[in-house]
Length: 206
Image: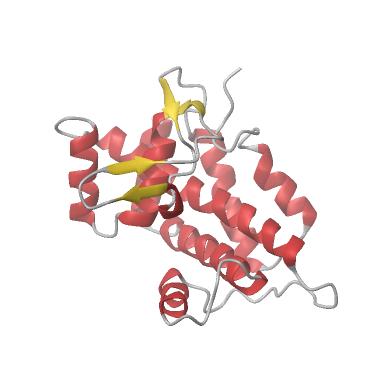
């Protein structure tokens, strides 16, 4: 049987995370309330599957200026085509115009409202899954004498990027892993509060 976005039942992962109480509070509650709406409306059973890498982050992409290599295919399997698109976009696509060009190249032409909506919703799914996994990794690497920091305020992708660029933060540390996980969750929530998200979910449902 084909596996879902993360190799486990995608809809079950957030439930398990909430039950773990690793992160609590209003932001977490609101984020997963929106995710519950996604879980009900996203077409998980679409038979249109493709070979998917499932983790197209910058560490798995190598380029010599002319050629591109995608490495670390250990998590690859047949999956929803929007998974790789959304994961890559969350790292490399930052404007509306870039998004349009990205999808036009992939779909070889015009992109209709349904494809755009499905891509946009999958970007939020990807952010939430990354947030869950990173917080779980941080919890395992946390110094034994410390409690997992619950503060969500100020943990943005922009702030994370600035600290990384200045050499003040590392993804190899508890602090870096936790901040990046929180930043992904905050960004997903920011997007899911938008009118575009509401419209996209309605389109998927219709």
